[in-house]
Amino acid sequence: MSTVEYEIKNTTELRNAEEAIRMAELENMRPLPRISVHAFCESEELQRVMERCSQDRRMSKVGLRITSGGIAAAANMFATAPTPNLIILESKAGAAGLLSELAPLAAVCDPSTKVVIVGYYNDIALYRELVRNGISEYMVQPVAMPDIMMAMAAIFVDPDAEPLGRSIGFIGAKGGVGSSTIAHNCAFGISNLFSTETILADLDLPYGTANIDFDQDPTQGIAEAVYAPDRLDEVFLDRLLTKCSEHLSLLAAPSLLDRAYDFEGQAFQPVLDVLQRNAPITVLDVPHAWSEWTRSVLAAVDEVVICASPDLANLRNAKNMMDALRKLRPNDKMPHLILNQVGMPKRPEISPSDFCEPLEAEPIAIIPFDANLFGNAANSGRMISEMDAKSPTAETFSQISHIVTGRIAVKKARKGGLLGLLKRK
Image 1 (cartoon, rainbow, N blue to C red):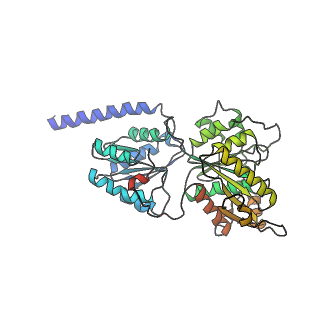
Image 2 (cartoon, one colour):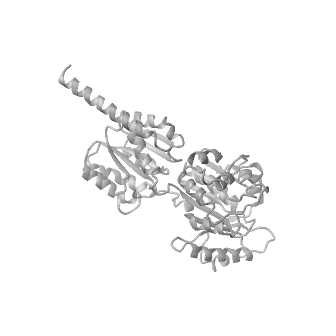
Image 3 (tube, rainbow, N blue to C red):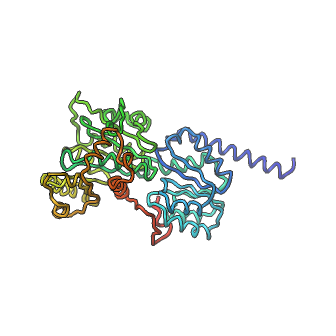
């Protein structure tokens, strides 16, 4: 055996031994949550590694796409498409060229998207510069399947990491204003428009309608989660969820009156924590009530949406809720307001401008009364965009979905600090 062959054999054996050690470390790794990952591979080696990752049991909830190409291909794709939760990029560029290559991607990348770069230069100064500018991880080739898995786990599974997802709570200013219908259509829209894993949690245990609206009949749901917080983890949550569409899962209410649903103030907090760590978006259908637990939920979510109809009782209630939520959430932006059932025949109404003036808030949407469209959708267990995707109401729900998730309908180049536009780790 020649010297070269001997060195190659030793190097290969060393790499195999190192990979075996890292594979053993994976045994204790928790499954990755419901995230979307898009890998752009310039080499066949990384493509094979990503394909191995896709077959791992801990990736069962991950939506993984693998594309041949580098940073330029990613920038071209995401100029017209929403970015996933994680982008993995392979680049052979050196320190000088890598930062400039990333600039076009930074201009179209959503702030919440994490980025991992697989490069070819073991340069600590480059690593520090990338991390300083918002890149989550820089890895040097050759990388193995355990390296990629552990990098993703460090971002999305680490107990010290920030919660993965955003939570959006919908509540009506009065009973019967269509808050649940709006919440369900927005959850469906978010999951479809952005191909984002979304969980809809129906918190109206006695009278919830999410299972009816999606034509589902689950045997388990939110009740099992809230009554057994000590059992609640990712595995238990998976058993309670019902799949409604490719990217939408439902945590349904029992809708039974076999018990009194009285809860303490923090009863739903463990459920919210687990939901936020398992999906990028959680939509909460909060019943029209004002109790310690509803106050606690509304105080904890990232976004609050108040739905109201244009009459005097709704105006009074919306005003009271706005004032109370400002005190509960002094460091957050104001709740969003949606006016629903506008233009109902023979019903005296307050004009949108007169309704919003005392609230000191502009509505993010005004939804006209359409008994035929909403009635047919409810009776058939379908969403508005499924009934008539080109209707103005379907477009309104699309706009609401963009606003409450912080996205914009058409991506435009953003001015400023290039890579700094990516959310920092």
